[in-house]
Amino acid sequence: MVRQISFFQEVSQYTPQVAGTITGNFDKVTVSELVPQVLPIVRAERQKQRAEALDALDTAMNEGKVVSTIEEVWRLANEGRGQLPLVEKGYHVPAVVAENGGLKVVDEPGGTDVMDDAVDEIIEAVLAKGGEVMLMEDGALPDHRSIALTLRY
Image 1 (cartoon, rainbow, N blue to C red):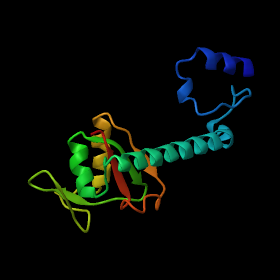
Image 2: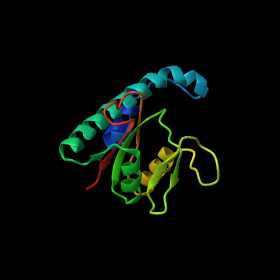
Image 3: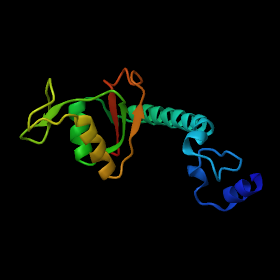
Image 4: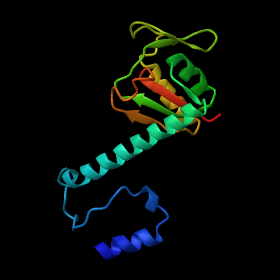
């Protein structure tokens, strides 16, 4: 098994996307039986990705390429300038789209004009325009009001 993994790593163009490997015979194993072996690899990879995203955020801040208010994030994400939004998992904002296309935060979701979660719409806009998204643990962005968007330019 180790030999096959080594060979795969030598010839594959996807090696950078491989977070880790486990060895054994899994022909008759259920997903729930694999979880205890795979979960530590996934957690370590997510932690690494979050650390890299925070480093990218610091770099972008030094270059003046970060916005951290929901209204600015909305505008720039919809303009296609968003590269990487970092969003705390529990951050949700009900809002309406103003006549000028901007975002107006409201107190409560509900009604035909109100988006239940503008953050979700921002994420979709960034992904649709070729950006990436990093969900962070709640409290991970204390200096950024729970959301920060690094900009392409």
